[in-house]
Amino acid sequence: MTVLQDRVALVSGSSTGLGFAAARALVALGARVALNSRGGKKLEAAHRSLSAGVGEVVAIPADIRQPEELEDLVNEVEEQLGPIDILVANGGGPRIKPAVELDETDWQEALPLAFLFIPRLCRLVVPGMRRRGWGRIVAINSVSARQPIPRLALSNALRPAVLGYLKTLALEVAADGVTVNSVLPGYTRTERQEELATQLAQQTGQNPEEILTAQGRELPIGRMAEPSEIGEVIAFLCSPSASYVTGQAIAVEGGYLKGLV
Image (cartoon, rainbow, N blue to C red; front, side, top):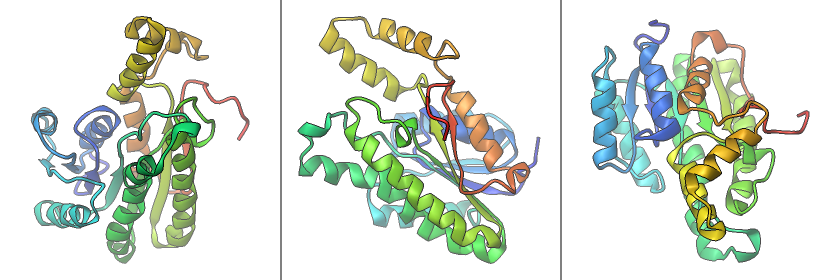
């Protein structure tokens, strides 16, 4: 399919996991995609993997926690591929800690990683999208924005803040042809989930793989998601088919959330 032919997409945090899955799905739809992470072998491997297909893919290292590097990243993408039509904002998960143990350093580290990079990137790309009358912004968030997860106090606090910012932005730019949404993945087989399982295993003496399997079985759907299943939803939100979908936080979580809204 080439429904995104000639559209330029920047996907941050895309060397592995959900960011890589989103980038791969966008390439499959014909987009010209800029991969991003702090660099290194994982980014190089992601670039090699996606460059083997038919789409145009570049890899640009930058630390999303640093505002000046975000500006350089956007400038480099536009120099190599053209104006950015699609932004998929993906960052790392903040430190795993209960609320009673958080200190000032934890907050200072978490804010740029889980929240601030999103409005900073939007500030850089939204003006061009509005001038051209077309744009797609999708943030990869978490179900913790709606249902707190034990020991993830930083995520539980900052993920809802992302939704508040994105909803406000969506209302402001909707009439300009720019849609703004977020995807809330649940338990998904990523390095982050494996990290959580390893930490829990150290506390309980269990095998991390046993923990991951048990967590999947507890979900109504009976298993964890594969990253590609999240990536396909993100690609849909970036496509022309989603032109009337904006301001939404779409949970892709196998029935994990218990609430009605």
